[in-house]
Length: 363
Image: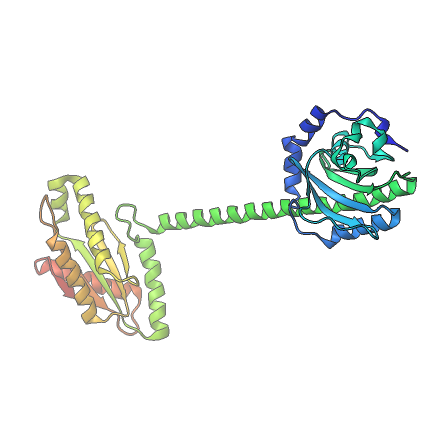
């Protein structure tokens, strides 16, 4: 049986087939190029060598410009080649890849088209039998091959062995492709989940952030106040609240316009953040009204923070007109809820305004 007698592909056809982007992409998807030897494939080549008696059996992947030998089995007395597992130059496997059918040669020196192949020309290879390893789309990944150093008649049983074990190798390769694809899909899913998480975080941020000042909004303030009250119940730590209001804010808007008023609110927000600790909650809870939750802070500490913010706001600089704030402070008493401490701080704020504004009043 000598299938090499059929007209072989020419060099142009071989080069075109080997360089085909789709085929090369399929080879890359195996994830096996330049991989370490694996017992899975070595077991198949050893078995093929024993059953056929071929001195060399190997599995090759056909990359651009090289054949990568994934597994090579050597018969008794055959010296193992040293160095790289890559084979360069024209090989029998290229003809198999282009024709996509088995190639069986009993004596390559008798066939002009194969006589000048490097292995034949060097006097190392005389007989060859190779089975193509094809994807489901018909792309040639490589070959499952046997070589002999002397002329050889390949029996039907030899070819059946190579075909069956070649199919086993192909199933393993397809499994690797499926695993690579699964890994890629999993990575895409992880990336999508991360994007969804990031989007949810942005949406949550939008839902809890005042768009003008960048401070927490009233919704976030209420939720965080409830959390801090729960901490107080567990640990018995103090908690204080500041309520702040811009003095004569209507006059500010009437004098420098609503855009100017917005700039004032943004500047005050900046002063408040500069005076606050990381654990403090700074929020805009109304038009020109702000609040600061002060965890682990008693009455004296709350008055100190309120006064520091008041002085910073008063100092400005305010290029268009002077701006001041009034501050009400309240410290949580036992059994008090959010509504009660908020009401006391708000009442203290009202008292500060009644007393002449630009001051801090304890409630």
